[in-house]
Image (tube, rainbow over all chains, first blue to last red; front, side, top):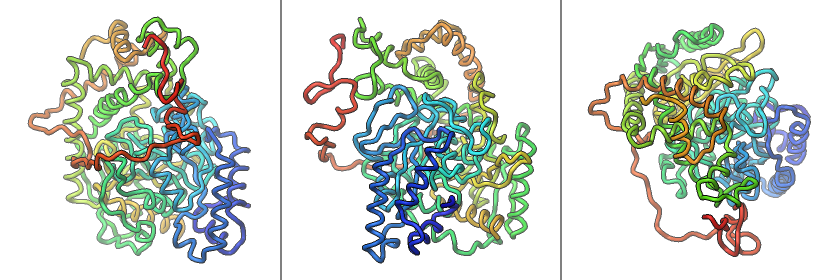
Length: 484
Length: 99
């Protein structure tokens, strides 16, 4: 069996009895076992083979099976920040090394009900904090094609797994760019839906006003299909939106009216520090849009320069509060000696010594920003600057349909290159953070490679809940530019 | 911005109940100084009259009916949520005596 590039190939194979769901599952399980990428933290072998057998029965017994179950037999990987009942959710942290989830995240439950097969849990930066996937307590993830490079983070396992054929599609989470950056680095599609589209119930919280679940795939069409199935109101997440979800995967295939499309090009996204190869690739993509008849519109997002600062106040403040729950009572493990502590503080300190360096750094930063005397200067101020960043977008979307630019200033960098300099690493997210702070739908779609084969992603951002529009533009870009 | 020195790092770490090694104190102090120095940028933005944005959509959060739902129970009929606790006794979380 050869690897697949899109779900329709697998579905056709099932329909024509060329291969079965169990065979496809076994193919991916073998691929995972052979792989040296460290993309998976846990393989759900028995569970997924059971799922595959059930899918086989459905295909055999129900002639409308593929219409009823839109993801029937789709082999997926799940970021290990999302719960699956009875399976470990480690968040790539020593703190939760043995934590078994008591229920399944709403998004995963919806995918599985639609027939998806969950192969296993994917590696990440500890508690989704990082841009290189070097912060996992269980070792870094390799880039799919360049072992000395990072896959990006924090959903590095999810991006590598799709890029290296260790699943067809996967789920990641994006707080400041954790889906789009690794997608750009690994040459796959990564899509962050509008904040509130996908329920966060069963997703371990990092920064609750920013976290959003989204898919990785090789094609925009598959990403749209996965997103469409898992989006929509969930009573267990009060921030999930009741905005209606369209038939995105079929709607985006309809012909594109290029002549009416206005693509915004923010001058703040084409600045010094963007590598020449990235700039060239993105500019060629913009010219391609123009050649199809779309209009390029110069726009300005003047508060972009404050986005990283704003994000690192808001995100770490929320994180320090969210991670206070790891007190050694309800979740995870207590290290040796914790039970013999003389005081309560000593007990907490021993338990919390299990956090890795980046997590500690962010908790300290967040605690500082929220502490008495600094709250107004940091958290309160950042929330106001956040509003100005969103206002920039609202102004821009009065003139344009989508905004295009680079996902990251560089291609995948070498492992270890930024470990001693967290600030430099934070700046990798300079173009992804503004859309996160504003809650906008945004994605990365491959738009070229350097001579050494490293991938470059095109960043497309839409207005709130214009998910379908962003997916449609990206789908036609991918299909018409690369597949005729 | 306060002066970032080892004392500040120690104070904030203790607020967060994090015990740091000597090496961590020194490297974190240097890194926090760099990061806070960068974050300081936001102080130059004029935010007079700007409403803070706490949630991207300013939506009124919907609340569900205050009705107890079925608990997640394991095969023995006990709450599953206890299974992954560091320690449990009967139907509760077990903690050492100091707590």
